[in-house]
Amino acid sequence: MSWFESFILGLVQGLTEFLPISSSAHLRLTAAFAGWHDPGAAFTAITQIGTETAVLIYFRKDIARIVSAWFRSLTNKAMRGDHDAQMGWLVIVGSIPIGVLGVTFKDQIEGPFRDLRLIATTLIVMGIVLGIADRLAARDEEGGKHRAPRHRKSLQELSVKDGLIFGLCQAMALIPGVSRSGATISGGLLMGYTREAAARYSFLLAIPAVLASGIFELKDAGEGHVSWGPTIFATLVAFAVGYAVIAWFMKFITTKSFMPFVIYRIILGIVIFILVGTDTLSPHAGESAG
Image (tube, rainbow, N blue to C red):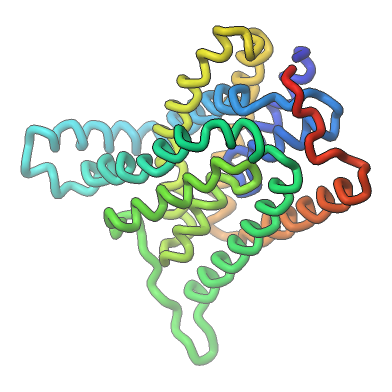
């Protein structure tokens, strides 16, 4: 991998990690369209450490409060009813599905799941799901002529069951094209949470899974499967860009709909199907190890 490739891929990772459009799909597609080798699941996982570091910094106050309350609740029974302490447990519970499924389907994630036809399918299907979830949320918030606005849940109302469902939605993002934020936000909206609550929990829930995955994949870099220099450079680029995207996205969702992302996902999926169907692009383009 060249330094130019690592810069572009780091830029793509930072731009797409927090938007509901799938960073893993865009890394895969960038390589395929440019005629480069697929950067691979290991490269993706390691560069995600950069974007998750941006999450740690952006949500540092929330994270510090949650971690502090969780540790105190281990020895102080009075703290166990504290919302921040409960959030600590809910993040742990929500991280279980992706941990179990990530290990179970590791070979598929690094192989068959990276087929461009599957990516196109998941882009379209999850785009439709996100669109439906977003429309339901808008209907509840706006009400109507004969319908009063309906209450939507905040993170204060997050239960163990809902936390586990969020976790199952996050696990779907193991398939490129699904999108971690897209799946968890869609799940949250369908369960009746506000856009802001769904997005905030989505980002917090991703921290353990992404950091664990990136650290686990570091062994591939050490074994020579990933180039150290370009990968670290891409990770730094992803961090800088990712931080700016988080700040923008959290403001965007308070007043705007997810429909632009829905339309983008569907159009991109259709374009991929057309390119593959006309043999302009191979469904396995760039899959050989670089």
